[in-house]
Structure formats: C-alpha cells, structure tokens
Length: 113
Image (cartoon, rainbow, N blue to C red; front, top):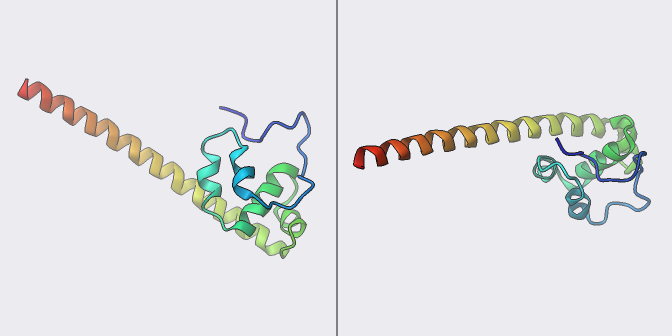
C-alpha cells in the first residue's frame, strides 16, 4: 500500500498557510483512495481533515486550528468514516459487476462461437 501522506521527510508538518487550494492539497496524497473520499467533504471539513492528517493531533484540535468549533472535528471524523465505507462498498460492487459481466460475455461468446 502506498504511503497515504504526502512526502515531508520523517515528521508530518502543518502547512504554514491556510488551505487556499484544497484540490492541490488533496492531489498530494499518493493513496488513490484518499482523494475521492476527501472530495465528498465541504471545504471547511476538508481543511479539518487535512490538518488532522498533517498534525496527527485530535479532531477537536484540528477543527480549532482551522477556526471552527471543536465539535466540528468529531463530525468530520464520522463523516469521513461514512464516506470511506461508501467508497469501499461502491468499489467492491463495481468489481463484482465487472467480474460477473466478463463471465457472462465470455459465456455468450462461447455459446455463439
């Protein structure tokens, strides 16, 4: 599995500037599963998630660091969990459909020969 965090040496760091371009920050992650899930968040929620990813602190601290109430951090954590589960389920369903579809096409081609 590729490294999920962007490469920053041994120590994660919080970017010095606010997240003006969230899409650029999201694109830095090397794990291809992260970007689609983060895109399901609003900009403020994504800023909390990115701060949490860079600092490794608590969700409440990350929410406060981007200027939101600490309770928002917990909401973002739960929302990310839901979005991640939905992403995994959709990928599994797509894979299962593709396998079944290929088998059906192969069977039909064999019959039609």
